[in-house]
Length: 252
Image 1 (cartoon, helix red, strand yellow):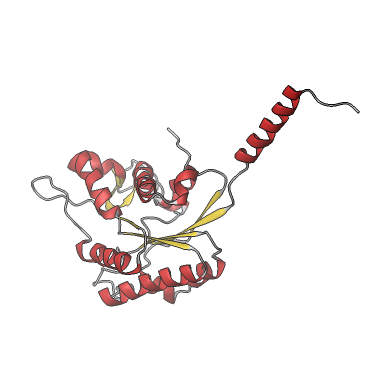
Image 2 (cartoon, one colour; image 1 turned 120 degrees about the vertical axis):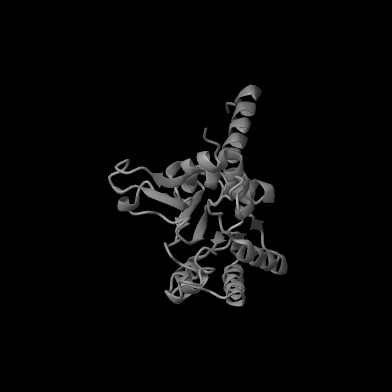
């Protein structure tokens, strides 16, 4: 009987260990639920971009992003239009649900989507509870800020009431929270009133064929803005030390 040399056996053992280490992590899915600041856009809307679109490119192959966010939706209409139930039915143990609403919930003038504060909180709790019932991990995000500056060049707080409600729910349910409202306001302030336009769908007349008259949009992002906001969410994941932190692939 022939025996392998000791060095060959050591090399084989090392290769076996490395193969084990390099095996991909178990597959998980991140569901994104929310409004137009996250959602995938139709070609006719470009260069408007939801932050959920570049978000898909920051993770390794063990992570799949399922972006269910829809333009114009509030927590109330996301439930009433049966957009939430398919997500709840699909959740598996270890999946994540990133929850960012508020832009439309707080719009009192838009009665088709407005959600009173107490109902807003109840809807957030519903998402959290039903995700946890499936052993999935809910993560709350305050609504990303709009780009509004005062006359002195200071960024204004545009979601004061509804961001506070998200924080209340996060505290009462012990749910991980990414304060995207605060993070985005800091970023816009650092850029300043004029340079921050680059992050939004601001276009001069005839600059883009989809918007011949031009566009001055302080809510929806350009491709650059969506990527920068997605990076803020990634920073939030790192700060929370979620398991997802180890699945982020740094691309420069």
